Every structure is written in structure tokens, then in C-alpha cells.
Image (cartoon, rainbow, N blue to C red):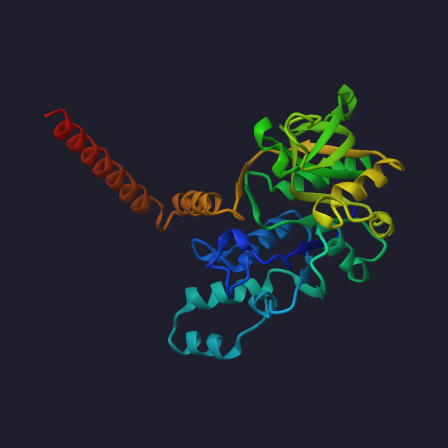
Length: 310
């Protein structure tokens, strides 16, 4: 299966990250020194997908600008011989072919995916939600593409979550796959038999949650058009995928790697710490800072406890 294009629905307002996202699109929030959207695009490029479709909303021109050239800034950096910074600025411009389309109303994720149909055309494609930052030796997108190619079918990234949190996710019901269907990687493959958007924990069919990576056939576009509004009054992608499931197989894959929910403050902070520690230029010094900070906190807590006992 040859997949050329990745769709990034980035029209969300990022209310969980206010006030930082009051004037800045949430996907431009930095993880160390790269915005979330760039981290996601780097993932799909590393997986062999070189064309990106951004689904944006009004007031989000800055997302498109991030992947455009900035001649004045580049000329200034070149004149000042700041080659490292110049290369970093140009990297985003040269990463991939970037296109964009507008989602005119906030009608749900499935509607955002549908907005990309004219630019995707009649071919399979990837959907990436950059809020879900996934780090691993093999890009999550590449893992899904390998499964999709092996089975010539759609694939959804899955992760197990606590049952108490199933009402925050799309949840799937699955059945086992045969030994001959299992992929060569370390992840776990499932055949999906049903999907439910944000079910009550007592009614959830499993604890396998849908994470923001999909490989989908073009057939999903007309099926989204047939999908009525569901949970929250929006057109939900799991509802459209249920229609797809009635026509063709659909797989779920428990990927290998670590996921950070960067749409929430804690997850975003965790992603920053993890990425900073992985950087050879700042990682050792940052690790030393963290050790010193934790030691100081422990010493302060110990001193406070001693005073209370006295």
C-alpha cells in the first residue's frame, strides 16, 4: 500500500491549554524548541510520507506560516553567520510539501478529515492528531503503515487506558487475529469489531483506546458524509469508522513507543522533560538540574518534617 499524504486536523482551539492558546494555535506550542505540529510532520516524513494536508480554521494562518520561508529572517541569520539557527529555520520549510484547507465550522474530527478530501483524492492516507506526541525507535506512523500494507486495510493506533478514563476516548471492541496475521514488530494487532465514542466506564467494551494515528482508505470520505452528528453534537470519526467496518476489515494496533497527551498541561510538561533529556546538547545539564531540584525539595521536606516532630 502506497501512502503519499498525511492529514493533520489542527483547527482545534486548545481550550485546555488556555491562556497560552489565547492567541497561539495549540499545535505551535513548543516541545523544547520545536512546535508540536513540526514534531508530528517529522514523524510522518520519517515514515516515508512526504505530503502534508493541514486542516485549519480562521485565525490560524501562523500554522501555515511555520512551514513557509522567511526570507528576511533567513537573510539576517546568514549575515550574522548563525548557521545552526539558519538551518533550524529552514528545516521546517524543507521537511515536506505542505498544503492547507479550511474547516469552516467546528463540526467534529470526522468533518475535519472530510475537509481534506479534495486534496487527498482517491487514495489511502494517514491522519495524525499532533496533540498525541508519540516517541519510539520506529515511528508510530511507520508501524501502522506496515500493518496496513500487510493486510491491505485500514489501521488505527490503540493504547490501553485505565477503565475509569474510557469516557475520554474512542474505545474499540476487538477479536483475536490468527498467528499468520500478526505483524513482525513488537506491537499487538487486533481485528476491530466495534467502536464507541467516549463510553461510560461501566459500558465500555474494552480498555483499548483510539490514539491519534490512523491509516484510512478513501472510502471513508463518502461514509463521513453519511454519518449523522453523534456524541457532543459533532460528527465523530468512530461513528464513520463503524460504517466502514460494515464493508471491509479494520485493524487496531497497539504500537510500541511512548505517548504524551500534549493537549493537556501535564502531558505537555512531560513531553518537554522527556525530549529535553534525550537531547545530547542539553540533556546532561538538564538531568543534573532535575537531580539538584529534586534533592533540594527532598531536603526541604525532611527539614519541615523534623520541625513538625520537634
